Length: 184
Image (cartoon, rainbow, N blue to C red; front, side):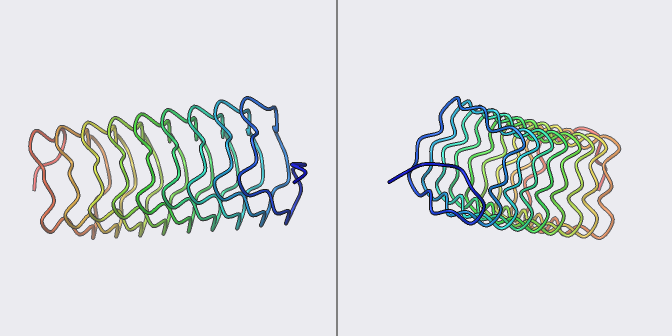
């Protein structure tokens, strides 16, 4: 199989580790199981792409467009997603531990069961996001907009919610031990 990044391409299982794909147009591409570990994907267009079970460990996705992308089970440990657009993205059971999601748009994103331990979500936009059953232990949610977010059963142990907007958020069954900046 030829692994040439392109819009709508079938690139399942391709290895792009440490590649420089800044600004690449991979809209709608099938990248299931692809390896982007340590790659520079800043400003890349992944809108509607299939990135299920992809390895994005330590990748630079600053300002990337991931609207509506499927990242179910993807490994985004320590990835830089600052200012990325993940609105409507499917991040079910994704591994986002220690990821940098500052100012990222995660509106109406599906993060059910995602691992967000130690993630930096400062000023992230999570309006209407489905974050139920997610692990947000020690996550930094300072100034995050969680208006109408579903946090049912989420683990927010030792998370920082200073100045976070939780208007209309569902915290039923959420674990709130040691949370900073939240007074129910």
